[in-house]
Amino acid sequence: MEADVWIERLRKVELETPVAVVGSPGLRSIGKLVVNQLIDAAKANLTAELYSSHLPMIYHTKPSYVSHYSLPGVGGARVKHGQVDLPKVQFYTCPSPSMVIVKGYHANFAGQYDVAEKVVEVLSEFAVSRIIVAAGYGSETSKVCCAATSPDIIREMKETLNLEVDYSGPFYGFSGLVFGLAKLKGIDALCLFAGTEPAPEDLEFPDPKASEMILDVLNQMLGFRK
Image 1: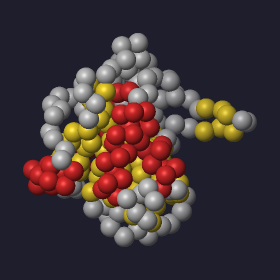
Image 2: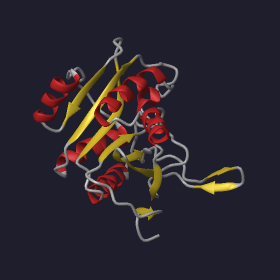
Image 3: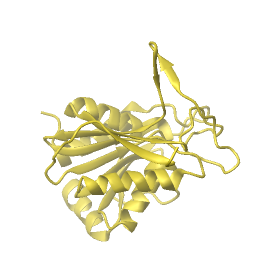
């Protein structure tokens, strides 16, 4: 294998100043739920897939987004209905509204930067105008707050959507790294955090109500619900 991370292009598309929306498994699986529902609502098309030797089939860590240098996970493939598939990050595209939707997957400790950097590189190739990350944060209050790569974006969110900056703390895993690396690459980026109460028995147990709050905000921003 020549590379640890590689891209398979499935179709060629041309988008006009697209916005990227990124989500992955995380606290209460909010980001994962958001991108899955957004793909369906926008009728987005699978355009490219990222594969990597750093993407485990089974995680040694729980939750999956908390990687550890001595717990790389188990490599392998998945068989479903007689078909075989590898772990991957998927890129979906939609012309109206112009979007790239990234369905993320957590890499192991050694490869998490390599995978996130490649994702940001692909989004740069699409010439995205902004990256919007969907995620959750632990809170007893059910509301959406924001974080961004610049004060100007935070000011914009306050003025146009009445979003406040209410979360401070770590942002683990795939989506957090994409968010952080976007700033290093000079791409405007915003995170929408939905407040959710952690489920102690399973931190990734889905919270559809929290994901719906983010989808409502995204719809105000992008207008994908007709």
